[in-house]
Image (cartoon, rainbow, N blue to C red; front, side, top):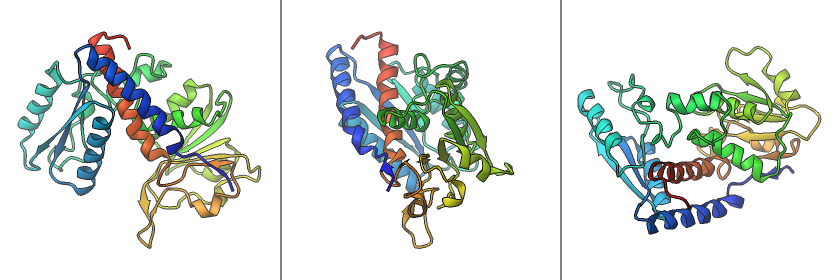
Length: 290
């Protein structure tokens, strides 16, 4: 069976590091503070934001969930973001998606200052990534950042690797393709119009599935070399209601060299990355050395 790339193997080390840095920052008179805007009571969003709040408090940071009624006017919504963006006591800010239909045309990532954009989606942060940044100046998108951390912890030498990413979302596929390119990988970004996906994935050293389709990637997507690494970003439920990823785990676990499980793989790394971005943002804004 393939090696499991579990977040648990490195999460505690990340948490310990964040706790240490947070304590050092607090000793200098600043408490890293995250504000989360949650519009309405969308059940998964409520769970996600609560989990993020618990994580931030676990590392010693402050986190406030600002719950806004789902019938809020666009004017009031934008004013709330503006006020928090200008608040010097707020180090990180993001809007939990999805938004209600009357607000979903708003590109909220561009309304948050890039130095407080802990989600990593502001155009300025993404431009830095396009220019070759790996976090030296930009706040990186959380899930792609977490994937890189998993691979680096597994001591995967990315230099010269071929990577096939299935899914071209702005949240995962596109920024991940840039970050891996910055790591000297050769990346093919596949999507619904790609005609020869299986041919591409079968030749790739690393296959990333990020499309939101339960058990989409099976053995037919892999080659016969048995040394491929599979990164499963999906969070879905199968026909029986069981949590699963975009990869048919049982079907491929014995024909690849390493694979991220669902749950317990990429998911926890995303919130780890959010914590890292908050601490980085606080340090940069305050000028504190830790």
